Structures are given as C-alpha cells and as structure tokens.
Image (cartoon, rainbow over all chains, first blue to last red; front, side, top):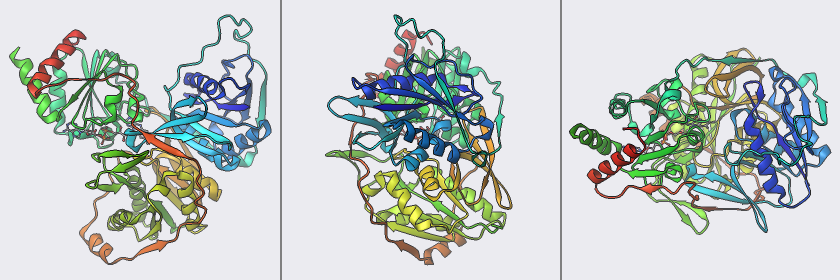
Length: 321
Length: 254
Ligand SMILES: Cc1cc2nc3c(=O)[nH]c(=O)nc-3n(C[C@H](O)[C@H](O)[C@H](O)COP(=O)(O)OP(=O)(O)OC[C@H]3O[C@@H](n4cnc5c(N)ncnc54)[C@H](O)[C@@H]3O)c2cc1C
C-alpha cells in the first residue's frame, strides 16, 4: 500500500503539525506494509525532517510565490498516479484545503474532508464532524483511492522511535518534480502585524459568540471579565466579522491560538474552527443555552443557561461577597 | 472582453443555528419547527456578486441551489437580495450529503455559460469545504477559496485569500473562474422593498438533476463522543452561580 502525505505550509515553513499526518498514516496502514511519501508543495521551504527514515520526499518545483491551486493539484495527481497512492492526506488548513479536493477529481478518488478520527478495526472508517458539529459522519472506505484532509490537532504528532539511531537529522532521498510555467501565477503575501498581546498574557479569557446579539451587549462580557485580575475578552469569528470586536481578538484556526489557565466560552457554539484555537486552554468552561451545543463536548465544565440571566446573577453574587 | 460578467452564485439552504437535530436510525433528522436559512458563507458570496452589480460590472446574476422543495425559499430570498434569476435543481434531501454529486449537478447546469462562479467557502451544516474546488476542477477553471476580497480590472480578477489571522495571499485569476468566499467585514444586504415586490412575481427555473446519482460512499451518523467528560453544573441558576464561582476559585483565577 502507498500513502502520500502533503506537508502543510505556514509562514513560509513546513507547518510542524504536519507530523500529525504521520500518526494518521500509521492508523490507516495498521499492520499492512506501506510506503509513505512526503510531498512538499513548493520548493522554497526548508526541509527540516523526513519524519521517518523510510520516507521518500518529493518536492514540487514551484515557488510558493507562484502558487496555483489548479496546477498544483494536477501535479500531485500525476505523482499519485506514478506511485500508485491509495491515500493522499493533508491537514485541513486554509492553505491545503484550497487545492486538496481538486486532486480527487484529477485522480478519481473519494474526497473526505475535516476528518478528526480514523478507525481501523475490521474495516477502515473515516470520521468527520457534520451537522454543524452536532453529529459525526462515519464514512466506510472501499477500494477507491481516498483524498482526505485531517483536522489539525486530531492526532498526536508522530515521534520517531528513540532506539532508531538512523533517523537523526539526516534528510534522505528528495526528488524534485518540475511544473510547467503555464501552471504558475504571481502571488503576493500580505502580513498584518498583530501587536495586541492581551490574549497571550491573560490568565483567564472570556470568549464571546454570536449569542451576545450586539456590540452594545458586550458591556456584559466586559463586566464579567473585570471580576478577574488578569483577564481578556476574545471572540468567535462571527463576532469579529460583525465588527463587535476587532479581528485581533478572534480565536480559532483563522485567528489566534490561546493557552490561558481558564477559557470561558459564552454563547459560542464550539465549531471545529473555533475549537482549533482553544486546545491549549487548561480548563474550558462553556455557558450556552443549548445543551446540545458542540462546545460542551470539549469543555470541562458546562453551564446550560442564557448568558443574559446567568452572567448578571454571577456579577451580583460576586458584588455581595 | 468579459464585462458585463455573467455570474452564477451557488446557494445552499441550511438549518439555522438553533435547529434541534435528532438521529433517525443513522441519519440526521431536523425537528419540524426548524427554520432554514441561506448558508452564511453563500450570503457573503451573493453580496460580493451584488457589489459587482452595484459597480455596473454585471447585470446577470443567477443563483442555483440543489435540494428538496423547501430550498425555494432560499432562492426566493436570493432574488429579494438582488439576484436576477434563480434555478432549482430538484433533488432529494439526502443527495446533498455528497459534495461530488452536488458539484456534478451544478457543473452540468453551468456548462460554460458563466464568467464567474461564486460559492461560499463551506456549508455551515455539512462543513465539507470542497464543493467550490470540485466545481472548478470539473470545469477546468482557475479558482481560489477562502476569499475575503475581490478586485476587478476588465478580464482580470484579483482575489485576496485568507490563510490565518496575519497572512493573506493575493493573486490574479483569469476568467472564467470559481471563487469560494469566506465571511469578512462586508455585511450581506437586507432585501429592499422594491426587490421583495419584484421577486414575488419571478419564476424560479426548475432543473432536472443529472442521472449519475451513483453513491460515492456509504456513511452513517452518530452523536459525537466527548473528548472531555464535561461536568454539567446542576441546580437552580443561583446554585450554578455559586458552583461556578467555586470552580474559578479552585483554578485560582478569582
Ligand atoms: C475556513 C473557515 C475558518 C474559520 N475560522 C474561524 C476561527 O478562526 N474562529 C471562529 O470562531 N470561527 C471560525 N470560523 C467560523 C465557524 O465555522 C463558526 O461559524 C463560528 O465559530 C460560530 O461562531 P459562534 O459560535 O459565535 O456562533 P454560532 O455558531 O451562531 O453559535 C452561537 C451559540 O450561542 C448560543 N446562544 C445564543 N444565544 C445565547 C444566549 N442568550 N445565552 C447562551 N447561549 C446563547 C447558541 O446556542 C449557539 O450555540 C471559520 C469558518 C471557516 C469556514
């Protein structure tokens, strides 16, 4: 069997979370002998590791500044064809998800996205969140090749076996595949500096979601935050899209990753994109009026209440202490 | 020259955030009282199209949606927001579970009639985040996903595509192209009264879905396993208040 792992690119480097894909590949392979290839989608990032001594690395001969989803997916499909890949897996990030599904068309494969669990007992099953995260969808894998994106954080990072001295830092076989000039385009990268470090420094972060209803209602959340000495207020993407909080306060896969001692999610449903940013929080508390909200699946403590009744009572209680 | 652009906006109708969901055997089932709305990201896609119309770059915005009869409400809403024509690919509820099939139906409808096909970056309910890419690849068009900005200059469209909080990519897409739109600080418009009146009289085109409803894969649904054992704080509201305070105290944040 053959598995092609696609390295994710973040800040012009290989995203370290790429190591999680090797663990996913092991789960897929189980005890079947498997050749694993690592594909690096551009040729201007430093190759830091093959992750495993037996892994062959293939580099697409294209600068990230010439990125073109269509050209890239065609090139990967043709490599998959050459190596007879059964599984092509990448991380579900904005970078990789742009071109990954297209490989399935070029390579005539299934396309299964946002996978968070892989089960391999008698059968191989990919599990993904669906119905706004309220249900899991189990997909049975047949003989057709599969292109899949794996949600970051779903698998532990692969760590090489200590006893294997051959791995060290040596980079084994790297092949570069050229790509037609016609497939390239000119890209510029825009980076916004985020000088706001309040979310990095806070002990406790109060996260606020769409359920707050308006910018004016945020006063309630600010008053709640004021109770705690080293606190900060953050929001879901919707709250930032609406302009109720600046984007520098957005937590999630396209926002900040936070690691406070306590995170209190107020009227946040707990989408996988939001949760991706709060995995570092030690204790997660959710206040939500919907007892089925997915946020409770990853919380340590749950309060099923309307924030507009609960938080004012909490403030009242603290005042009287 | 492509101006005025012919634009197709793909729309999915989804249950709103408050919808109650049940498992019926192994399939999702929404409560009868469920309110259905246009997928949030598709509203942003439509808004991007309408802004091109405001600039005089198009007077030809079509919307398309695949699904059962109830989705006509979403298509009607798209007309009220300012789309010119709406088309309904009549499929069953379940068929929409597989993005490949939906992409095939849309591709079959779109053929080579449109300069720009807009979709939302993903659907709020199924969260596949692949339909735009599949349509583009089936048609062999240029594309970009996660787009938070569109600038036009004749037949060159420059898109801004968001990677993370700090980083975006910007590049030109040659027409014809597919653009999958991410939510941003633009606000999808409310229908104007004149559009609402106009939309009332408009006919929604019915489209037969393509035949190859070959099942792509077998799937079933379950309630997600919890990754943490969430301790629900019990009691009356005032008791919960006290309990939460204790927990916060134990965690040394108060
Ligand atoms: C590519 C991509 C990237 C994304 N990146 C991010 C990201 O980085 N960060 C992010 O947050 N999102 C991100 N999103 C958006 C994400 O999918 C969700 O849409 C978003 O997180 C939902 O925000 P929310 O929880 O505030 O709103 P909703 O999902 O609408 O949830 C509101 C919740 O509030 C509850 N509620 C309502 N009123 C009350 C009340 N009075 N009291 C108590 N509870 C109440 C409801 O029960 C519900 O659970 C991304 C989406 C895409 C497609």
